Image (cartoon, rainbow, N blue to C red; front, side, top):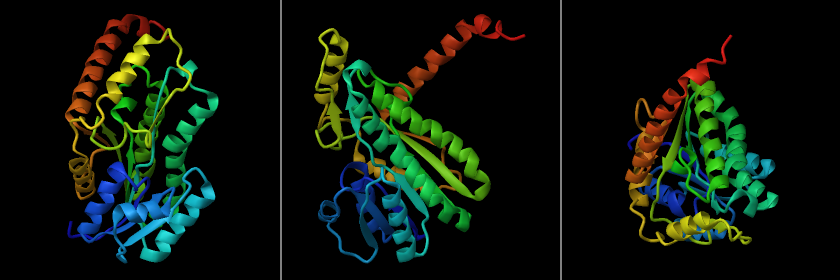
Length: 277
């Protein structure tokens, strides 16, 4: 990591975001990081280095995002890597979640990411360089029972990242979307996960799924420090991946999904192609 870069990381007071910030500061990088509470962020990171710029940002508010990025640029003179890490999980069958709960999940998981991209792009275009990393989830590739809204939001992050990569390639800007599996962070705690408060008795499979996932807290196979290191290392690759899976469980779930897609597409080939003129 000899090449010193300016990193902008959202959702940095816990989980992957916090691991990323600490590792980057230890490596002498310049880091701007956001949280809903600046004091909590500073306490979590435990650094008053001039290389660290903590920011209190409402990622759903365009003005807050725009001002934060302007502050980063004025402080460090450039922005090299953007990591859209902020997000949270939401569980429940679709009819068990209110419109407000569903929209809030999309606001934080999807529209906050879009806000950051929208307002950082003028800086990256001017530089003709940069790397945008969006943290999605394996759920965005293959969702689980009881997590429809979360899967939909993370699928949206994957879809927008894939097209963003096409749109900005000629500008010298790279894009990677990360799809982690289960990692030993605070994701399965009340700080990062909300579950329907209006369960419907008939959804027995949903309740079973929620119980299974919540019982995994603290036992997940993934090491968040190794995940953060992998994300950082990708930035220094000459040809970084567009899609990066993290965790053996994510790898296996993705392959199972691919096998199922291949089989189903070929099984219905005649019906599919019969609709052409």
